[in-house]
Image (cartoon, rainbow, N blue to C red; front, side):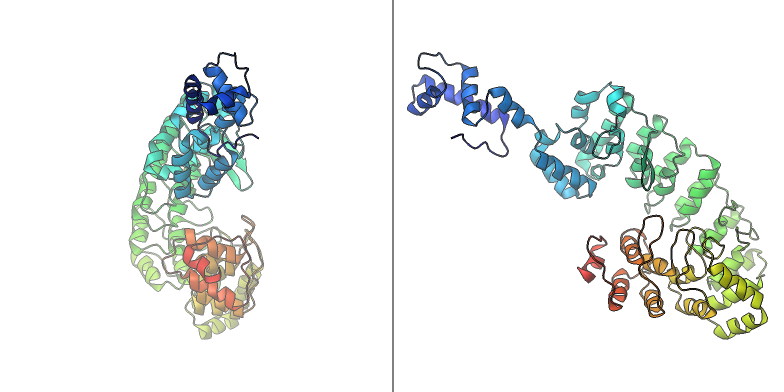
Length: 503
């Protein structure tokens, strides 16, 4: 019967076994003589190659070469564990596996790329443009993508190797601008480096090699990392077309970062770009500070510029019930003028139902305009980057305003152009009181938005990890869903304190 080969067999150890067998045979030790006799006649002069053959046969292999190939072949279980750990950002597990099984893992091309094993990658394909640009499973993407999306760059022991591996691939002919089409949109290596990992070293290697900055994702998502602006700065310095610059500037205004906002303005962002809404209106919508609003005006933001639906910054502030901002705008020179529609919405935001009723009675056409717009999936009230009116009251947790709009007759399940509801927006911002109100009033929990096919509870889970809402209470928001009998089901991921609510 063959001996059992250890699960983590080491080739050097097996070679030593062959040498030990040969030495024992030279001393005529009975066990060695008996073992060799099973494979060679007594008169045969046994050498090292013969001893290796004996070791191979003892373990059930036809010859030493087949034993060697088996030992050197990467263990599929270890490889899959490492790949999965990196894909899931389980850095502790990935680090442990690499430390324990490095010789095995570095022979797998994907593992070597993920770990930034520059030596192994150099041996595999340095100077080979075919290798540097081929689509490699399991993600069917070129080597550079595996490197530039590797979360292991967050660990000091992998960081330099990943940057060097990216440099080797580019020197070998890798296209730094290759786009991989995914179901959810295009992915470039620059998006991975700057938008996902937000790593200046990888970002600089790509930009120095001429990576295009118009992929629609890299600059946009480089601003998603609070307090870290180096990747954004590198992309802006490399040059960005005006359309992308202005669009990404508005996304920067989604975040509380005066430094990041100044960075975009210093590189030519237009505060009066009218798409969806102007920068000033967007900043008001996203709750930016008075300091930021004043900065935008100082940098040329037009106080009277209208959004696509005709809303001025002053009207935006009043729609949101933000009287402090409205006062600032007037002090800076804005005209305190509102349309009949905005008068009603402002009164609703103030929670003044008596005034809402009086205005509605006096302006039935304006009420019709509001409720009719509320039934249209791509209108000025609910369209745009994050919705307006009902959606904004839900996102802000503005209970009186939310109640007033519902009492005015807006459909509780009205959707914007991305099929998002007020419940989605209350959930992503972690607003438990708004969620309870919406559920009490009959809001549906099964509506899925069109971008990621997620229901409102899915937005709650995502928001708990990514939204950075200072005033949100995600565990309490989750309990609001559960109190109304909602079943989260299995397979959802969220912040640990949120998972603890229903796990």
